[in-house]
Length: 214
Image (cartoon, rainbow, N blue to C red):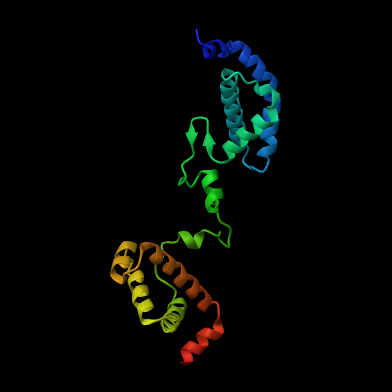
């Protein structure tokens, strides 16, 4: 018999593990309630608390199997479990990074999801116009765009105008990169630069007037 075999911890009976964890459970639940106090939805808050307890139990059993007593640091155990849940990890896997209903994805990408209004007042609601089946741009907006767009294009180089024209035709990034001899990353940068410049141009009435007079 080797020395490592003699030193190996003996697994505790399941009933004993349950009893020891039950003594820590109030501390774990209280920490989770405080940690997730900003979650408004009571169902989501309770789910987060339950996931925290489940992870704490899993880690408690693993630490016991390694010969460590997790009851000596209950606050740290609860905090690590709550932070893991907050980051999108669960006892049975991890939330999908591209799931719009995932709280972790919403925090990471900076957006929120809310239900549609159940009804409308006499003045309508904020979604009425967005949900209307109308693809025709209002005439005033058409006129403004037809004046501003050529004026803005005149502020760019000939090469920029060619790239912008192809982007307006929804050419793919790799096609633009090959056509203009630049990297796909540079194409993405140019999209952002053009967009920022266009937004700045439209927000500066003086610049627009000068371009129209020119």
